[in-house]
Image 1 (cartoon, rainbow, N blue to C red):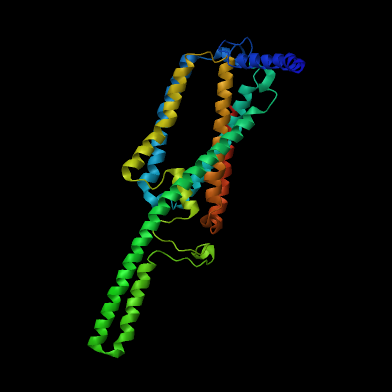
Image 2: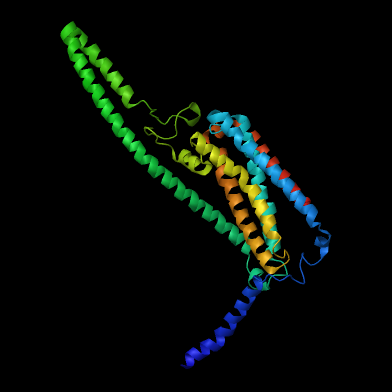
Length: 348
């Protein structure tokens, strides 16, 4: 009994203190200190800021619609397989996204979560911005892995069904060829038997291997880097992942629907954010905590997308490694995009 009393006297005040500190973190009351109470934000013109947000909504909507329409209008040759111009545009975008995650979003998250308005414990005792960004990046990885596995399993079943149907067609072709060979032999004699069966064998082989059979030639010579049959709708892991990450290979209506949602996501988010901001104090502890956490999550997701889905996917590809000129230009454009976006932090 004395043990429990000692534990209660030691840890209950400790827990009570931390609960009070957490409660202070979610308070909606305006802080006496912080950017919302003084400093440069005293000169903030809210009506003018709202007008600029509306201009940003319209601009991003138009730019997003144009950007997502280019690959759809250009087709597969202009997007997925990628011309040199398209690859360079992706490299520039990757640099912009990478700098946005590292320089803008992560910095804003650190600024929000280290504000004096928030209690020192736990927000300034632990590097929450980097930790939350790491969790967001790992969460994105898990989501892509699960989506890719689901896609591969579903299309693996379709490929197995197609292979079975192809095997039946080949068997029927062989049987028809054998009958034709027998008939031809009876009509033209033993001298033509070998030629008839040879033709049947060639046609059967072509039907069984109508999709390419890779032999592991050098990657830059047009060969594949592995030795496997490419039957039906089977795809390389990188291609399957590309389909999942970019919502690629949809039918026309589905592609247009996904493009529509892509174009309106950011403008709708800005409009909702502007509406919600009018109902709470921007200088409250709750506002700093929520904004800091969301900025940290955005930073981790953007960094992951830039490094894994864009830079690694293109810069480590066979096409890039086999084209030194494209490789050098892509690195230069990537650096230009990252530096240009980083420079905006001077005014942002």
